[in-house]
Length: 179
Image (tube, rainbow, N blue to C red; front, side, top):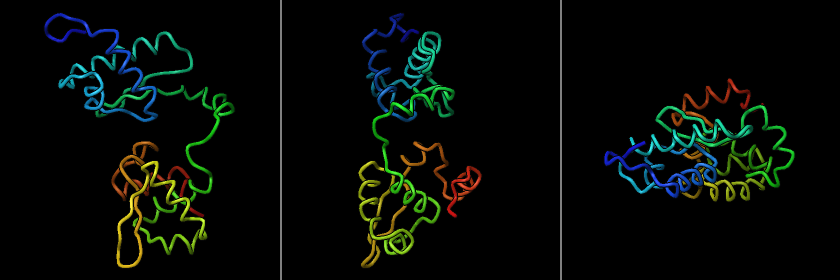
């Protein structure tokens, strides 16, 4: 890959982009890759991410770099190795109870905290704090109550549409809808 001057990206820049892909745990946009690489050219950033993808995909057996539309890039485990890795994962990002609360929010958003308490229990307040800390939900004050909805980060992390109607259809088709 060349930047127009004939110079190849340094190994250090490629390493920084690779580190960002590894650590992010989600797809990175071309703009985010460009910021990591210290360039304003998304074209250069995409070329760098593709170079890393070629290297990773040809040298590693269980890890891959995938290009999504946008373009966005994610370093992830190949599907066939997820179950093996799951046995060794130390701690999930969210507890099962917080995930269930998150599914209620995703499906019924915008939803008041008081309704979540009625459906889930008062433990929901701890779940909401945890979900806000990881950036999956945001709240806004409406009168004396708070109303919760999911964020773009939630949609991206779980591979869902950011558009509410499409998200609900995806949740239904993935059998993630509530019983």
